[in-house]
Length: 503
Image 1 (cartoon, rainbow, N blue to C red):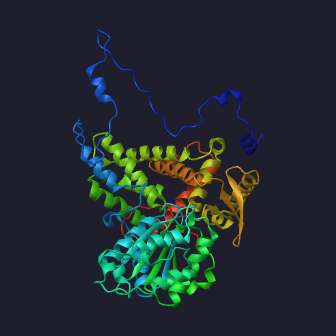
Image 2 (tube, rainbow, N blue to C red):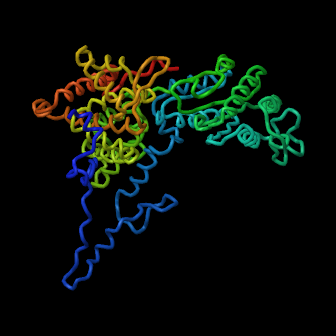
């Protein structure tokens, strides 16, 4: 029976009760010790888990942990589940931010920011809005939802624009002095793009940025059409209001409909993955704020596994820093990062369906999981997609590439972790679940990085041929950024071929 057939079949009865491959094991809690009279020792109560700080971010008076203050700083330094709002933590992307500011200020165009999930779009938007507020722009931030509609969004926008900036009202007018807003001038009926543009045309003495974040979440085609029409109205009349739109998308047309009619009125930016230098800068910013230091090998490890993702870099740095503090250290080592990777893998695995988990575990037994992990790294910032060109770029041997393409074809045909993807760029492949990509890549990257630190004979011993080839491909991925980083003595990070053909 081939390994692919085993993937499709059931596991033997003896193995069905076994736990399906947790990434790391957790030791069972020891039973509370008792003294000679049978009572619990007094110290048992002090071992009960407690919060380290209060809801007001103050240290708990009941704790004697000398690193408690450092823990609080670490949480603020690395926030993987939240966007960057503190400019001190904004790493790299200075050229990108400069380009966005010049597009808004010099070209007076509307801006669309798009890219993969976790690439840092919302953080970029927050820092951009802070720069605009410093220049005394009125900035109205709106996070779109599935049911967002044009009327709701722009009534909220109008409510945040003071009436004193309306050309029809003097600053000393009664309505302006009472703190009125443009929303006071809106009719009771539904708003149209033309009506909103007419209202904004009366603005004077200021400029307004309307930020529509999470734009991809909105399900209404009518909302998207209205936004495109508003952009055209605002641009054609040189109105002092500009839109900044951000969302997850593989290309521009996925995010905004009717692009041809407004193409000359917008500047579109696909947020790129971060370079090795930028990921290093992100970690170094966290070091300065938290007081936790990462040794060189630990930093290399984070940069390698992050693969250009600020989310992964922040997640690993956060967990690794806490792991070091748990051991009464403020210096993070490779072992701490390895524990952080294990914890991240557990989190991603929890987001994967049981069906895919079983397929991943079976693929590990055949040696194919590691190979798929390398391709997941290539697809991570390519909308989850890869094709034959990605395989050829990573596997220079025609025979090896052909063999892997055949395996991928069979996997996609039987819908084992992969499925076919057909678009204007031709035939390709997509991972069946979004969370499968980072999980497979992190597994492969961790394995490759740790093995690279072992003596050469030990690292190569008894390894399947498929894994040896995949290791070379992973090294080739890393070399793409290590060559650029070498001049500055920066750690290497994997840089799978970016989706230059997108957009």
